Image 1 (cartoon, one colour):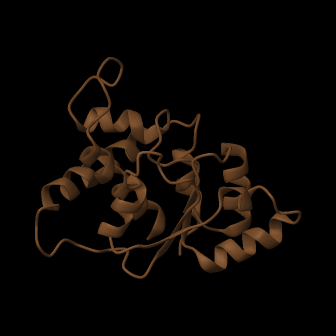
Image 2 (cartoon, rainbow, N blue to C red):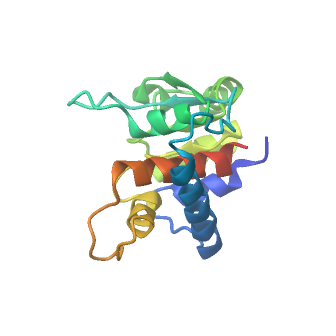
Image 3 (cartoon, rainbow, N blue to C red):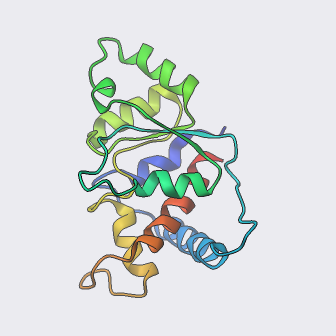
Length: 171
Protein backbone atom coordinates (compact mmCIF):
# COMPACT_ATOMS: atom_id res chain seq x y z
CA UNK A 1 0.00 0.00 0.00
CA UNK A 2 1.44 3.43 -0.90
CA UNK A 3 2.09 5.90 1.90
CA UNK A 4 -1.05 7.86 2.83
CA UNK A 5 0.51 11.23 2.00
CA UNK A 6 -2.45 12.21 -0.16
CA UNK A 7 -4.96 11.70 2.66
CA UNK A 8 -3.82 14.79 4.57
CA UNK A 9 -5.43 17.00 1.89
CA UNK A 10 -8.89 15.80 2.99
CA UNK A 11 -8.58 17.04 6.59
CA UNK A 12 -10.35 20.05 8.07
CA UNK A 13 -8.64 23.30 7.24
CA UNK A 14 -6.87 21.85 4.20
CA UNK A 15 -7.30 22.77 0.57
CA UNK A 16 -7.27 20.26 -2.23
CA UNK A 17 -4.57 21.08 -4.80
CA UNK A 18 -5.91 21.90 -8.27
CA UNK A 19 -4.55 18.71 -9.84
CA UNK A 20 -6.16 16.58 -7.12
CA UNK A 21 -9.46 18.45 -7.55
CA UNK A 22 -9.41 17.69 -11.29
CA UNK A 23 -8.55 14.04 -10.64
CA UNK A 24 -11.36 13.65 -8.10
CA UNK A 25 -13.93 15.43 -10.27
CA UNK A 26 -13.03 13.32 -13.30
CA UNK A 27 -13.16 10.10 -11.28
CA UNK A 28 -16.43 11.10 -9.58
CA UNK A 29 -18.06 11.90 -12.92
CA UNK A 30 -17.02 8.47 -14.20
CA UNK A 31 -18.36 6.79 -11.07
CA UNK A 32 -21.62 8.73 -11.34
CA UNK A 33 -22.06 7.64 -14.98
CA UNK A 34 -21.35 4.01 -14.10
CA UNK A 35 -23.44 3.90 -10.92
CA UNK A 36 -26.44 2.35 -12.66
CA UNK A 37 -24.47 -0.37 -14.38
CA UNK A 38 -25.25 -3.85 -13.06
CA UNK A 39 -21.57 -4.85 -12.91
CA UNK A 40 -20.17 -1.73 -11.29
CA UNK A 41 -16.45 -1.76 -10.64
CA UNK A 42 -15.34 -2.79 -7.16
CA UNK A 43 -11.71 -1.62 -7.18
CA UNK A 44 -11.36 -1.76 -3.40
CA UNK A 45 -12.63 -5.31 -2.95
CA UNK A 46 -10.94 -6.81 0.10
CA UNK A 47 -10.01 -3.45 1.68
CA UNK A 48 -11.25 -2.59 5.16
CA UNK A 49 -12.46 0.83 6.38
CA UNK A 50 -13.19 1.68 10.00
CA UNK A 51 -15.79 4.35 10.71
CA UNK A 52 -15.55 5.91 14.14
CA UNK A 53 -18.69 7.96 14.76
CA UNK A 54 -22.10 7.58 16.33
CA UNK A 55 -24.93 6.55 14.01
CA UNK A 56 -27.07 9.38 12.64
CA UNK A 57 -29.90 10.33 14.99
CA UNK A 58 -32.43 10.04 12.18
CA UNK A 59 -31.23 6.53 11.31
CA UNK A 60 -29.97 7.64 7.89
CA UNK A 61 -27.22 5.46 6.43
CA UNK A 62 -23.68 6.74 6.78
CA UNK A 63 -22.70 8.30 3.41
CA UNK A 64 -19.08 7.17 3.68
CA UNK A 65 -20.11 3.62 4.55
CA UNK A 66 -22.56 3.42 1.66
CA UNK A 67 -20.04 4.84 -0.83
CA UNK A 68 -17.26 2.53 0.41
CA UNK A 69 -19.42 -0.58 0.22
CA UNK A 70 -20.28 0.16 -3.41
CA UNK A 71 -16.53 -0.06 -4.12
CA UNK A 72 -16.27 -3.44 -2.40
CA UNK A 73 -14.85 -2.11 0.88
CA UNK A 74 -15.68 -3.98 4.07
CA UNK A 75 -16.77 -1.46 6.73
CA UNK A 76 -16.50 -1.79 10.48
CA UNK A 77 -17.72 0.62 13.13
CA UNK A 78 -15.45 1.41 16.06
CA UNK A 79 -15.83 3.71 19.05
CA UNK A 80 -14.70 7.29 18.38
CA UNK A 81 -13.46 7.50 21.97
CA UNK A 82 -11.03 4.65 21.33
CA UNK A 83 -9.02 6.89 19.01
CA UNK A 84 -8.39 9.46 21.73
CA UNK A 85 -8.29 7.28 24.84
CA UNK A 86 -5.02 5.44 24.30
CA UNK A 87 -2.18 6.06 26.71
CA UNK A 88 0.24 4.78 24.08
CA UNK A 89 -0.65 6.25 20.66
CA UNK A 90 2.03 4.18 18.93
CA UNK A 91 0.51 0.90 20.08
CA UNK A 92 -2.96 2.08 19.10
CA UNK A 93 -1.71 3.18 15.69
CA UNK A 94 0.07 -0.14 15.12
CA UNK A 95 -3.13 -2.00 15.95
CA UNK A 96 -5.27 0.23 13.72
CA UNK A 97 -2.79 -0.05 10.86
CA UNK A 98 -2.83 -3.84 11.11
CA UNK A 99 -6.64 -4.08 11.14
CA UNK A 100 -7.75 -1.40 8.68
CA UNK A 101 -6.76 0.14 5.35
CA UNK A 102 -8.26 3.52 6.30
CA UNK A 103 -10.26 5.17 9.11
CA UNK A 104 -12.87 7.94 9.03
CA UNK A 105 -13.78 9.66 12.29
CA UNK A 106 -15.94 12.75 12.19
CA UNK A 107 -15.05 14.10 15.63
CA UNK A 108 -11.31 13.62 15.43
CA UNK A 109 -9.20 16.75 15.21
CA UNK A 110 -7.16 17.22 12.05
CA UNK A 111 -4.02 17.24 14.20
CA UNK A 112 -4.91 13.89 15.82
CA UNK A 113 -5.83 12.44 12.40
CA UNK A 114 -2.39 13.46 11.06
CA UNK A 115 -0.70 11.92 14.11
CA UNK A 116 -2.53 8.60 13.77
CA UNK A 117 -2.01 8.61 10.01
CA UNK A 118 1.73 9.05 10.43
CA UNK A 119 1.99 6.38 13.11
CA UNK A 120 -0.42 3.84 11.55
CA UNK A 121 0.68 4.27 7.94
CA UNK A 122 -2.92 4.36 6.69
CA UNK A 123 -5.23 7.21 5.65
CA UNK A 124 -7.06 8.70 8.64
CA UNK A 125 -9.83 11.17 7.83
CA UNK A 126 -11.61 13.59 10.14
CA UNK A 127 -15.05 13.35 8.54
CA UNK A 128 -14.47 12.69 4.86
CA UNK A 129 -18.02 13.65 3.83
CA UNK A 130 -18.66 16.20 6.58
CA UNK A 131 -19.68 19.79 5.96
CA UNK A 132 -16.73 22.14 6.00
CA UNK A 133 -14.29 19.55 4.71
CA UNK A 134 -12.62 19.80 1.30
CA UNK A 135 -14.98 17.33 -0.40
CA UNK A 136 -18.05 19.38 0.58
CA UNK A 137 -16.91 22.29 -1.57
CA UNK A 138 -15.98 19.98 -4.40
CA UNK A 139 -19.48 18.42 -4.32
CA UNK A 140 -20.88 21.83 -5.22
CA UNK A 141 -18.53 21.99 -8.19
CA UNK A 142 -19.50 18.49 -9.30
CA UNK A 143 -23.14 19.49 -9.15
CA UNK A 144 -22.29 22.36 -11.53
CA UNK A 145 -22.84 25.16 -9.03
CA UNK A 146 -20.69 28.04 -7.90
CA UNK A 147 -19.15 26.69 -4.68
CA UNK A 148 -19.35 30.13 -3.04
CA UNK A 149 -23.12 30.61 -3.32
CA UNK A 150 -24.79 27.29 -4.17
CA UNK A 151 -26.17 24.71 -1.76
CA UNK A 152 -24.14 21.53 -1.37
CA UNK A 153 -24.28 18.94 -4.13
CA UNK A 154 -26.76 16.13 -3.74
CA UNK A 155 -26.00 12.95 -1.83
CA UNK A 156 -25.08 11.05 -4.98
CA UNK A 157 -22.51 13.71 -5.91
CA UNK A 158 -20.95 13.43 -2.46
CA UNK A 159 -21.01 9.62 -2.62
CA UNK A 160 -19.13 9.69 -5.93
CA UNK A 161 -16.56 12.11 -4.52
CA UNK A 162 -16.10 9.97 -1.41
CA UNK A 163 -15.57 6.96 -3.66
CA UNK A 164 -13.03 8.88 -5.75
CA UNK A 165 -11.18 9.97 -2.61
CA UNK A 166 -11.15 6.43 -1.22
CA UNK A 167 -9.82 5.02 -4.47
CA UNK A 168 -7.10 7.70 -4.61
CA UNK A 169 -5.99 7.08 -1.03
CA UNK A 170 -6.56 3.35 -0.52
CA UNK A 171 -5.12 1.82 -3.70
